[in-house]
Structures are given as C-alpha cells and as structure tokens.
Image (cartoon, rainbow, N blue to C red; front, side, top):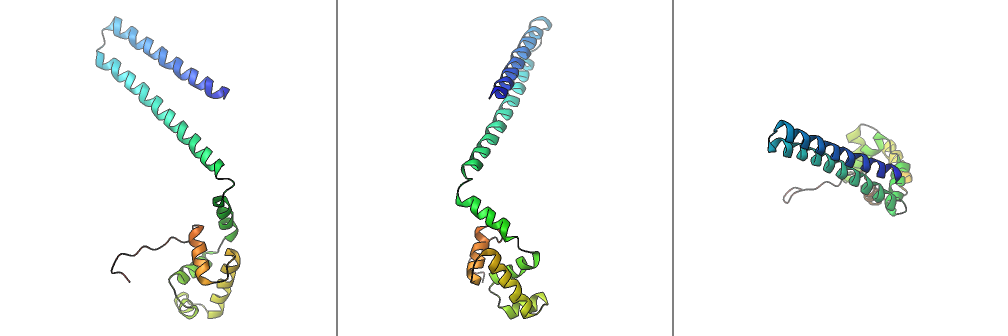
Length: 154
C-alpha cells in the first residue's frame, strides 16, 4: 500500500512539475497553445494507460484469487494430473470422432491392443470408465476443443 501511495505521489509530482515547466515556456517563449495542449494530452494518455494496466492486473489477480477454491482450480489440477501423452491425445481425438478401436488402429498404424492400452490409460488419467465420459471430461478441462459444424455438414 505504501509503495502504491509513493508511486502515485511521484506521478502527480511529475505532472505538476511538467505543467509548471510547460506554463513557464508558454509564458516566456510564446509557445503555441496547441503545443501546451499536446503535452497535456500525452501526459494524461500515459497516466490513463498506466492506471488501466494497474487496474486490469489487480482485477485479474483478484479474480484468480477468488477462484482458488472453486471447481475451476479442481479442473485445472485434474488437467495437470491427466498429463496425457501426445499419442493418448491423438487416440482421444479419434475417440471423439466416434471411431472404433479397429478404425483408430488402422488410422494410426498400430495394433488394436495398443489402442486398447492407450484407451485404458486415458480412462485412468481422466478418472472415467466410458469413451463418452472421457470425451466430455477432456472438453471440460480443455484437452479437446468441441468441433462446431455448420448446417448441412455431416
């Protein structure tokens, strides 16, 4: 808190100093009014950007802190625990497409037993027991992005 007060005080002091210098130059060197207004515009634009950045950062930090005990953090830890291998994610994407074990094995050029092993590993890591549950859970924790189809696409 004291650091913030000090920073605000220094910024306001700089603004006062700048306005005094600009006023001095305006009076003694006959600078145009547009120059003085331009200097003020730059100063206040910079202050606005700084304040917005500070408020956004503070808002994001508060939001993250308020979500610390919610299901979002639980899902994030589940995603961390899931830690699927690239091959398991590839198998999961095929499962999401609705492919059978045989079709997945042909597509990925591996045996059906390998696909079954990957599938059981996916189920274990996502703590599910069915293919549909695995796809739903993967979408919930952000491992898969739902595919949006247009009318007429099948």
